[in-house]
Length: 281
Image (cartoon, rainbow, N blue to C red; front, top):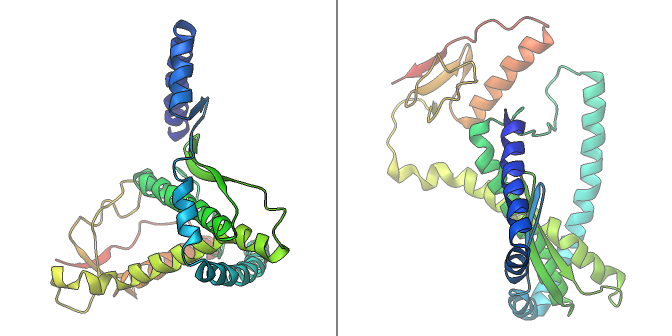
């Protein structure tokens, strides 16, 4: 259903665009050129040089600080590169040795293991990550006295992305080029760290706006119809346990669900109806 929706969502407007181009070719081409738009089947992109001066001002301000910042990014990027390779190899090894056990890394596939209700957040996350990533490359380049020719955003099928068109980096030293190359991943790593800190701090930041008594638990804010809990819980309930697994916070909630999933697959049992969560109104 998702693939059909996306397909029709691209094909029908594209057919209409082609009919308009056939009837008014000069008007369409003038509009696309004026607004720096590129439209193809399954792809729409926007490119502009309007932010070049902004990148130049930001990268040129406190240049020594930026150089130090991106030098740290080079070290962090190399460490993350080695860690990623080790993690991927370990994930491959564990998936081959224990195919039914929970894996360290699980690919996120929209419509498969990402609920359709979460897709807007998923795509918004990708768009923000891509924007922050490319800003890292642009600011790192201008801090190395290289120019940004243009900045662009695009959507390919339903995945958003971004890019920067930089002037040549050949005159830079190897380490200076590494600053520019590693800047995007470094910005993403810092963004993840900031978001993680905010997520951990949310219970304390939101505490003044809520009141709760008891020994903890998680509040059901919504129930997806495709889950096994759709008939067991309702919005507003506080879940304090799943079977014999106590739930005091969101970490316990995830742990209990993973244990339940691992039990069913590890024991090679046909899943029976999920044990009703213990709830408190």
